Length: 240
Image (cartoon, rainbow, N blue to C red; front, side):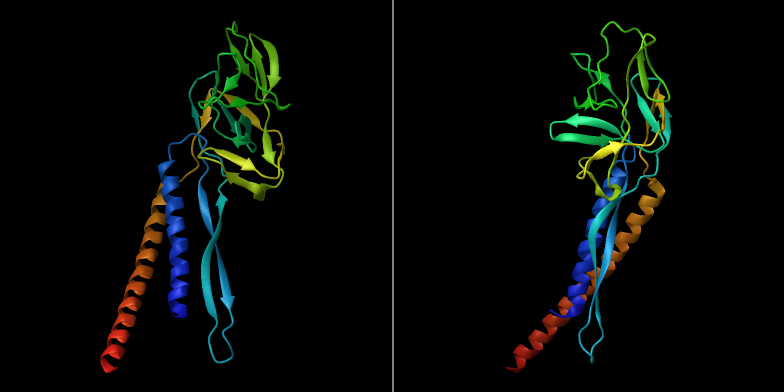
């Protein structure tokens, strides 16, 4: 197999990975708190000797998470929270702590605030948040102070990864920071709002078309190279 085919196969692999990433972004356009992803490509250049051109190969080496804030949608729910600014809510999951921007919560049977998957929302001290069962009203101040019937209960924690480059998707709306988390700078917390996905549907659909066309061009080249090599082998076989 010649260098042109190796280079094209590497490129095709990266483009396929990007198509999968863009498709996942499009599928989560309406997912609360979703953060879109992109693929990072790197170029490897190898010297082939004084009498040959260098070989350039592109490969998908990782993903990056787009951190732009999504639009805020008003729901009126007393336990729907949104962050206006940087930072994440901190959840206690079966696999450890996770960060999220999805702020829809509810009390469980014990009165602790959890998300739809039953994972605990943690306060600024890293502890679960308890809502009194007889509370008639729940209020969230912009600084994160959570109160029941006018009595302060706790302060919602806002967290961020110690290393911003260490953040990775755990699932659709949750992230893990392998290097740990730390308190985030102050931000405004809103009650009765949820943050929507930050995916731009027009940009993602346009990108999907571009990637598909690039992939089709690469596949056309590989098909022609395959036919060329088959024709060469038939010619050589006929002469022997």
